[in-house]
Length: 393
Ligand code: ADP
Image 1 (cartoon, helix red, strand yellow):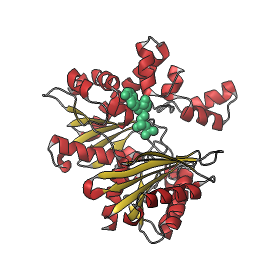
Image 2: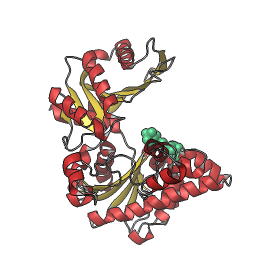
Image 3: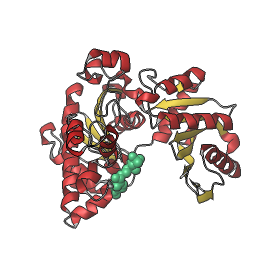
């Protein structure tokens, strides 16, 4: 068997999955978390059920040992033939998934200024996994790589040229693995070759981004140099007037770090509602008449609809709008509200189909005769495993 171990390493957690591509199965998946707290823990889901393992030491090395132990216990260790690593930022170095060697590690390190929170953690995951599986090939899959096909008019900011040339200040985009996966699935659902499709992909989870995908290639996306730009998200503000930084520092005396923290961690759905970053919770609160929750969802859907219309520009036509991620796959309300703003593009919601599309189902939610809105379940782990195999073959 050729199974791929998929690793997604954060600063205090390590997500993993074992994927068997021949049968499209996730054999096992899990999360090692609280890695620097008093009681780090590893949770594993597999056919054998759910298993919770207490880790005896702090840190990523112990998490990796725990994962090895579980694979061994379930007799799966010998089946692992490759390791695929999610890496957040590949800058302009990486236009596709790449087999990891010393030069690739260095290039990921060189991208740290672009993703200071994520790339160091991703590198740590690579280091530990290479120690644990020294004889296996390791492949890096970048969130940014799919968007490297964007034309310059889409990725450049209107800033002095040297900020781009000397410091890499440009739009990179994220969620590339998900956008690529769901657009491939959508082409299948539409019964069209991917090369002939013009698709808008809306990935709506805790982070949210939207991408215009023409013939299978990203031509524009809403996230920028960092994941803060674009749509309203769980705790991130998305687009705003950059002068707000100066205003907040002058009126409230906030440091740049404080402003950045508020924009990334205290804004978005959480900020507007004053209640929660969780869409499901907000919908419940809205149904009870909570004004903040209602407004947060209104702003979320309105901004999203504006971006869908904007993404029609590089596409020229819209064959389908894809909803994915936890919110896109499950929130009937968000899909309905968003489409209600998009009559101008010819979308007509089918309320029955919309109501039935929850919990990982895929399919259309619009009436015939206009562009299609589709719900497509994302599966980043499977896409990482697919790309790992592609690189190695
Ligand atoms: P992440 O970006 O962390 O992977 P997810 O893709 O799991 O996040 O999305 C999490 C979001 O999905 C949360 O806001 C959650 O409330 C929302 N969500 C999940 N299920 C539902 C549901 N049934 N109705 C509305 N929102 C939901």
